[in-house]
Image 1 (cartoon, rainbow, N blue to C red):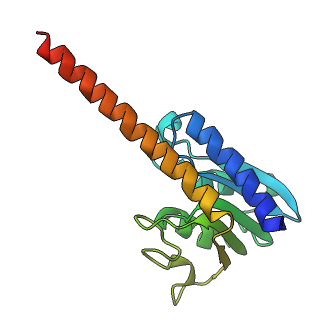
Image 2 (cartoon, rainbow, N blue to C red):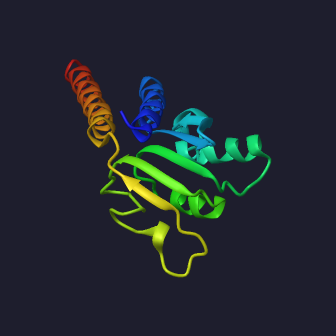
Length: 166
């Protein structure tokens, strides 16, 4: 197993935590000098915060830990391709390298819909590695949304039965 795969496994642990909490299962870690300095998962629902994406949370914590806003020398590992907000935060925090698992064809801002990280004119362009443990990263999302749809159908059916009984 490569070092990238080992670190992505750690991001998947975070994604599973999000899944268990009913959050969209995205996990991220930030590595500096071969040490994980921050790890998080999505917390938008729990924190009632639209910006509580895994990537934003690891960036905030890493800045605090390293006592600087420039995260040069760091690699971000995230299970799903970053969105536009997170891609902007990656640029602004000067992260050197981004490694992600699965593409996000509905909201990805690194390669799928947009290409924020290598947009001409920006003052920073991190190195990018895509598809690390991509099948596993994709599968946890598929399982989550399949389960969510099933629960929604069950709720709708129960509500329908209750209305019929009136």
